Amino acid sequence: AHEVHLARRPQGFPTHDDFALVERELPAPAAGEVEVANRYFSVDPYMRGRMNDVPSYVPPFQLDRAMDGRSVGEVTAVGPDVTDLAVGDLVLGNLAWRDHGISKAKHLQKVPDVEGVDAKAYLGVLGAPGLTAWVGLLDHAAFRSGDAVFVSGAAGAVGSLVGQIAKQKGASRVIGSAGSAEKVSWLTSELGYDVAFNYKDAPVREQLAKAAPDGIDVYFDNVGADHLEAAVAVANDYARVAACGAIAHYNDTDGDATPGPDNLFQIVKKRLRIQGFIVSDSLDRFPAFLEEVTPWVADGRVRFAETVTDGIDHAVDAFLGLLRGENTGKALVKIS
Ligand code: NDP
Image 1: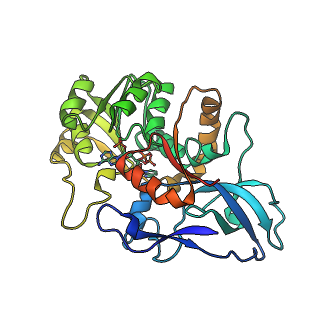
Image 2: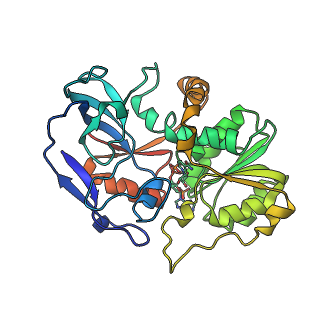
């Protein structure tokens, strides 16, 4: 089996030298364990935070050990005492960054068998990114029909869903920002965003002011920095912000930090509410999320994209590409 280890803690933007592809012999699964051959695994921005040795809501990755994250694969062997899984079952687990792995059976879930829905959708549109979009918009930003919504990172796994869910639920206007002309045109031509702009073309503050002449009621923040500042600047009184991520800051070092918003007093004047959240606190919402969103995905009302990188030996490329914006929709690694 092959697995990707964290070889050293990245300083700033990660490089290939921070990782090592390691081969190892897998033991036979012990009591309560199963062996899984991965088909796909997820690479995600939050993994960058886990590469730093700092306290957070998830423990840091350990050096010279395989990293982990969400995966989908096929059971290839079961240990003694495993009764609820069998060889050939498709399972969701936490075996990212490897081609084969051993997991406790109780940490795996069988992939739901829904017509028209591929197993890898449970790593993206119907998995943690989808749930993040849904709870962030509905629970944390308290979205209401008629709201004007701005989404940053709008062509990514989470952002591409936020705008579509808002549209399904009666948003008056959905505005997205993303980092390329192709992404911007995908948002408006395929996903139903009313307006979108490339944040690299001109200052976000200028572009958002033009895109939102009547202000915004909700901001779904995936980026922080200049995007949060611009959203605060155009926000209507009592607007709500779901603070989901701040990817503009993830590669900051002590000596080299991306500037943050300079207009925080507007939060007071406009009586804004900014709510940070972590999706793993909302796992009890997963059934309600699946019940609402699965039919939208199955019948195509909600669209999604996946950017698939082939091979465990290119997993690091997939992760670095995600930080550079090379993915549209969910970034996945495929194991052939
Ligand atoms: P994405 O699929 O959106 O991938 C990351 C994207 O971020 C890239 O494609 C890139 O797109 C964009 N990006 C990278 N650097 C910058 C920058 N400096 N400024 C603006 N955009 C940038 O990832 P996810 O959908 O998985 O995650 C989106 C956000 O949500 C992240 O901040 C993540 O940490 C957060 N998140 C939070 C969760 C929670 O529980 N709170 C759960 C899941 C995700 P582009 O080409 O547009 O630049």
